[in-house]
Image (cartoon, rainbow, N blue to C red):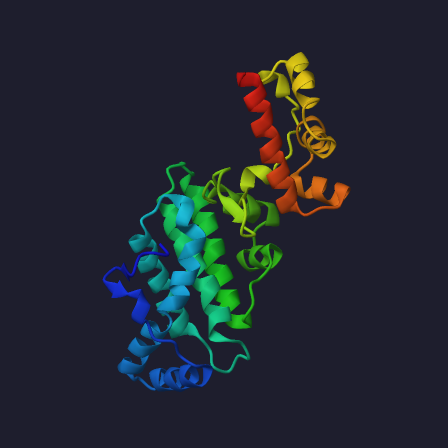
Length: 258
């Protein structure tokens, strides 16, 4: 998306940026019925939508579709923003845009969820939006459950059921080097390394690695530690653990292939 200039016919290189003072001025005019002020608010915050949809780049959805859905969330935020609240518009708008995109992704989720669970989840989301608008902060699940007069566990179960699946290969951190993926954060509790390498061959191959590489692989694949846990235990960054782990695994595969 970084090389794409036009999205939905919008030239992203020429999008305006509004100052906070101009934002408040336009919001006041819009509240008085000025439709042109509303249009300027939408145009002046499209960069905010662009920044949000980058979070969803790896979901397999077309960027134009996500942009259009994000714009719907932006317009809802503009229409419902309360100038009396001491909060930046972007702080209020981003959760609204994210929520609209997540609802779109859930509606297009191939995993089937029962109608009753979906209805409960959507009611919970509506209550969450209402409480967010009312108090200018996101409510807890307990507060949502209280408003719905339902057990907290039912609300949690319903919301979990409509969450879209996340790929193990979705990047969650990037420090300019190798990215760290969701799968890198998951510990191997089943300890089933024998499914892909013979135990004796592994021991022989491990001897060819450095002491630090051996330590990292033992903690990751034999002790079931996450990269973050390993990083804390040996006193280096998670990004360094990720790079050393990838290099060690590459060496092991090269040895096995030889």
